[in-house]
Image (cartoon, rainbow, N blue to C red; front, top):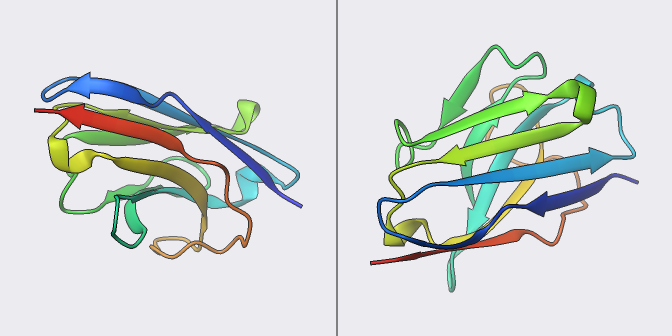
Length: 121
């Protein structure tokens, strides 16, 4: 049973930055590509950014490209999301999960509690 714990969210003004972390346990973390997803109020959960198991290849949703950076530390079983130039439309609960390489759909049934990001205008 995988356990995912997201952290690092908070309230920030538009143009500000946050760094999110997701710690995974219970699975062989470094065998999986990982991704960040987000769910805004009243909307479906959407893909944000993904990173292959080795960390050498990343890909992003068009809405965050150039502003967000995903990275991972396999020694710490942790994936990160550096978010810069935040916009009010980035307000959401952010989650991480495993994905197939290059894919944008989560493959683990278990989700963490997420971390809330609120961007004020």
